[in-house]
Image: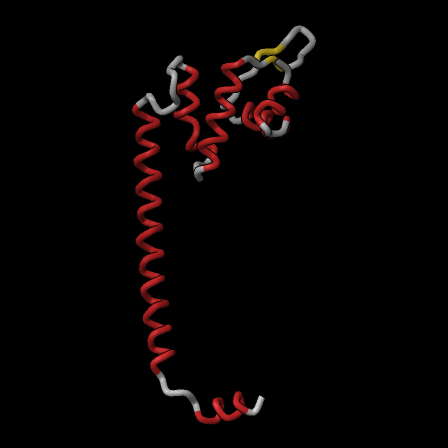
Length: 130
């Protein structure tokens, strides 16, 4: 298939596919006329990239998964390098969750302190007159 058909079948753009090729993620064979030629294996590679990008992986993070598929594995996460990326990304997510929990706790403390203060009589009177 040509690049336009691959883009249509994967719901992406030809520009994105050319970018993947430039990054070494999507090698394309060339026809005698210079057109890129793709097959079902390329379709699998693009879908793997898209799936991983959807869950927050950088394009570079997808490389071990693509390499794993290109070596003939049925799944992109069948190789140790891919599993290691999962572990690293999970650690990053857990660190973000800890950071967000700390921010949440600080906000709850500030809200509790703000609502525990007695109302300012000047502010209360001006609000009642509205």
